[in-house]
Image (cartoon, rainbow, N blue to C red):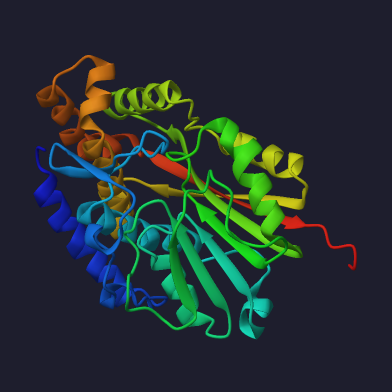
Length: 326
């Protein structure tokens, strides 16, 4: 897999620095015991090119779910928190302080869930994910994690959550599932007056050089072949409104790739490279190039993004469920 071990090593060091130096860093994720395959009977896994993937034809998840991916997702959490200077934007701070019921959809290793549970000890947090990479045993008493496919009916009562958090699902959901399956179900379990907040990365990357442009085009073709839309951000406000959410608010922030943006620019580029390294086999096939040529594209990115001042945009979408008592 090319230079992946050295990239992971650098990633771990940078992520460790973030945990120590960030003024917001109160995560307990580094001290948790993450779930492993032996902890659960489902889902089943397959191994390709040294990476572990979900082996389930009903699950549309493009990326691996192994230790390297856990490292990347934890790093990505700190990157997003830096971009927004917060873990959330919805107006839910007071109810979190008083005691709310919160659902984290696609929780991954549970980094956001654990931080929020530590910050708001009176609230109860439930993280759900299709892969058991979340903490199995060591976690706060106000936290639980469950294996759950978000495209299936959720095992929660109507009107049971005060706040629902979800992010980076464009590599998980088919476009039709956004508006016809997932959001209707989340609307059902959200309390009247409750809020949903969703974060997504926009693959309309600005100032792309030729190497990044080629890789992104390959990724877009790969997603479209699976009926996924990697440029779903412009559609999400409409999906929320179509499913009954009101007061839909959209905010956008940006971050730069590469050394010109300091530590977080380097982290953003590492995140990009790790994603595309994991997808090397399908995307190189789509681009009709061999793995050596593909690796050459990745290797040129550092110089390219610095020369082009390449940057990306991240969206936050917030919606509210109508409360007749308001």
